Length: 301
Image (cartoon, rainbow, N blue to C red; front, side, top):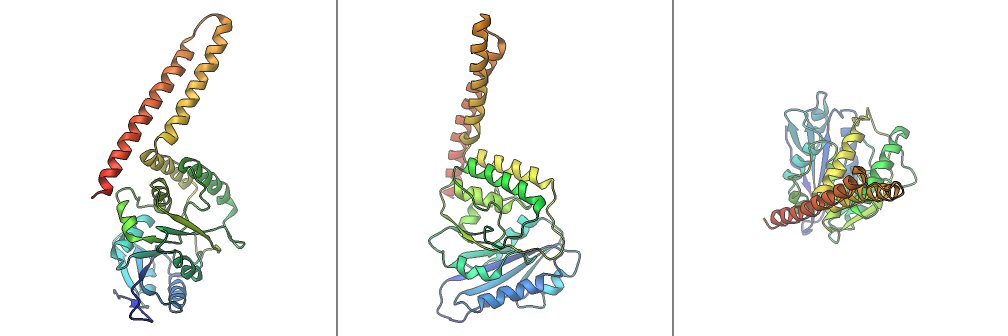
């Protein structure tokens, strides 16, 4: 069953927004989340559309969502958080897209405040830095590490790297479809992609509540997130990775060269350090040129 919802309190209102809710086995939470979103948006002047993407759920998630006036997209199998978001964003009939999780962790009441920051920003992120943020203790060290790593590589502070509540310009997101993954790393990738390409991103503090049901993020995902961050930065800003790596090799070569002076014998280690540094720097410069040419050709399409 598929229903379309595009409500308006003011038929002359030109701006529209689509709220995309990806859901995988969220039968206990999806109904309440839809009701919260509708209640909040009905109090605004925004014309809005709600799209629920059932990501191949094996429970009654789709049945629960179909009870409400929403556009329901059912994926034939579980393809991942990012795939569900891309399906919902592609179906959106608006210039702006809001994404929010179905598990009740993100406050739907924050959506109108986020929308006040458009159109001057390309993406408005609900940053989980409010006074009542309830992130599981086991996830805090990994979250801190990933945020610091991404902030260093992106050369600017990132208060929240992978928040699942944000407003984005649909046209901007579509430019990066070719690198957006199908898994949980969707939000991490779109954040780094916009920051590395000088798009305007605004962070608005929000609360974060305990989820309904079991989390689908596993400890091994920390490794995957780390690898993805490095790969994304290498794609957009490779010198941020290659220059420090080359510097480490160069300093090793210098240290070994100074040590060898006392022994009056230049070792292979010192030479290898110098050569390795120059090779890494050369690769970095080549990668930087390829990244700029490749990105420029894609953005012109």
